[in-house]
Image (cartoon, rainbow, N blue to C red; front, top):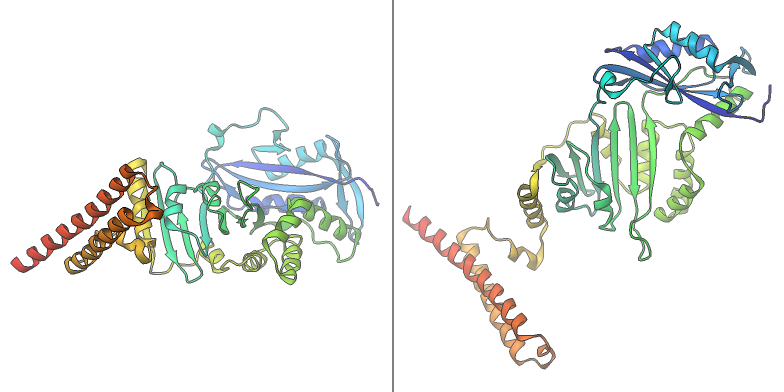
Length: 396
């Protein structure tokens, strides 16, 4: 059989309660009928267990004919969808079977019946990623960020998802890894251009527990059609090739990355894909259970005041050079006195320059006065704090 028509169906098996063996039950039922396609891992919900399967069909009709694989790997016409799905519901004893999202025997179960999905785990990583940006991206809802620097940039895991669009506005490359049950997703955002408000990005999915229903003989018609189905499920479009080419400049790395995204997905390929795009592949390990390093720090957000305070604390931590003079609250008395005298001295020089330099005469006087008041106030505040700290230390 060599039909030019090709499509597939999403069939979702739902078992009420905790059913850890649900994926094996579904896979066995599909393999017994010699069907062509894939079965994903079991997805746990609050009151149910779901297993999704993608099965190749001869045509895209509502009651299409399914492919059947014979012992030699040749493709044959199998049963029609409606008939077979009813058989599968009986043999697997699933409580619901959804065909392209709709229950075949009645109303589709709602969220109250099935419950919520398990929480997702997210890791964000980038060589120039900043903790202050992540705090802002976490929003005003309560969240907990676990941050650490791995030598290849900042890594952060969050209790609730962060807004990657907010991070993208920084126009620096970053990686966002998300794990939901057995599925891993890598979102890679590159550097944008002046013409684009947001940088371009590509996404790569891997189902860690997805398996083939039947493994056809290599080179057989069934194997070719299975590869075609696999490629169609990746969700990788032609425009993604172009976007990836804009993110990866090295042609050899680009060709390797393009080959990876069009091959069957697995953990090894995901780590290599991440490395080819310039990110640390160890980030994938942390998302899949590797213990976090000892140098982590935990930042809690929630509400305008708490989130702003956390963002300022991260901004202070990231400050370098002369910017460190703006954040001296944690310094010792001697360092505060010395730095404050330097601030006051530089303020006096700036004041003189504003008054005498012709090039600066265009600066409005009220603005000059406001600038110098803030400059002197900063120096005097920390000078006083340093002197007070020194006095307390002597009195002990």
